[in-house]
Length: 262
Picture (cartoon, rainbow, N blue to C red):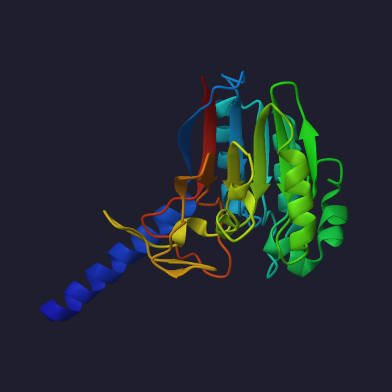
């Protein structure tokens, strides 16, 4: 075997190992959000882009339970439009609902499949938060479905109504690009915005960041992590699954745990 061929084989084996690692091991990513409002101690778990990831179902549930959240938010793409495994998605919902309150906001994959059909298949109409909000004593949660199925005027009216609440306000929007578009989420008095959609940028270059994201192209502004615009904080999940191809590198599937602190 020539030295060049051996080097190529070693490189391919290494890339294969990395693909298997980064696509089959989930992690918990933790954030702290400061607020002056009286909701310190609130714990939120964010899951997005599960894409009926059967391989990681058990580990995701176990890690969410260990986070001991007060509320669990699913920010879209629970199922995958190319392989809509409703059984696996329903199993995740059932397990999560045994941990704490769960709210589900649909994404672009649900929109393509038909939101009503997905909700009916999963039997989860009671937890879907599309275009409505839930008020608790210390906080409120608003859901905005993917822009494929809602109108800008409807969104503006809903956000204007929601921002009048005086407790800690959380908005769930599938795409992070909704954060700073003209007349959108960061224009309103909302404390925390939760998103997904971009899968962490698929491939993350060490010391640089995400390579590619839908809606944003190469070297996206938003991929995963915490961002701030005006007085709103946005947290973008790197996603808990894949669609089409397992292309994660330097980018584990993740469960996001958020602690609200005074």
